[in-house]
Image 1 (cartoon, rainbow, N blue to C red):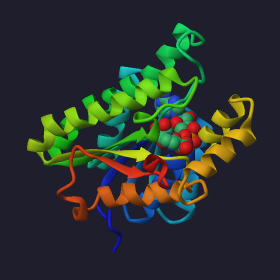
Image 2 (image 1 turned 90 degrees about the horizontal axis):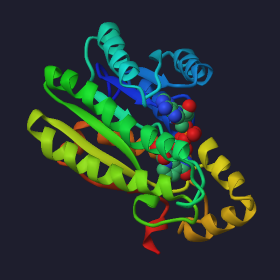
Image 3 (image 1 turned 180 degrees about the vertical axis):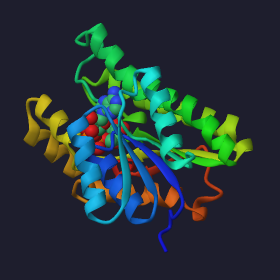
Length: 254
Ligand SMILES: NC(=O)c1ccc[n+]([C@@H]2O[C@H](COP(=O)([O-])OP(=O)(O)OC[C@H]3O[C@@H](n4cnc5c(N)ncnc54)[C@H](O)[C@@H]3O)[C@@H](O)[C@H]2O)c1
């Protein structure tokens, strides 16, 4: 008996990294998973992996910056599976740059994906959760919601905003039995982190710094975030709401 049997989960950014690992785990635990991504090939690949493992998934191409596409994503989910129980707002981008280095397009792309995209998914999925009598929202924050790294002004600002958006969601929708929490994620071995290190111009230096800052002396695996996300979706997490849940290998201890 899977821990998510009968549950319908939308996972954004499910074509890569933590979103893919979460999709595979949620499907393994019996959920019907909507793999949402702007990258069609990557999303379809995740669906194929889920189906090869005997799970149930549907790919929906959606750019979460676009309201019409998010609305269609939720509509397609309800049409295919009848409801939405879980919304995992995982998709995000990181564009390197200090305040003066960033272009307006960089700023808009980052805030549009990481903050507005999260809000749009909530805006359209929450009414479905209300209809279903409750739900779970998981947002993706970061250790960079609390501390800063150089030349990441837009990303850091966007991840700070996720903490407060999560609290707002918890405040407004707990009465509808919708539990919103966010994951405070440390360095995880994904394409996003690899790109971030490459963009720094000193990938080895950044890696050395990360390994030193992590109390466990290693990067996290995407599956280690997926397992915490899974826990948040189960009744065992019934008293957890509005919180930042730290999954960071000890980065914030320093
Ligand atoms: N990897 C880390 O070290 C780390 C650390 C802290 C926080 N996080 C957070 O974890 C989450 C997942 O990160 P990851 O490392 O797995 O990233 P990733 O780059 O491996 O995957 C992100 C996915 O999001 C998709 N995406 C990007 N823009 C989109 C859009 N507009 N609409 C729909 N999909 C879009 C991409 O196509 C990609 O498949 C992000 O919110 C990230 O900020 C990651």
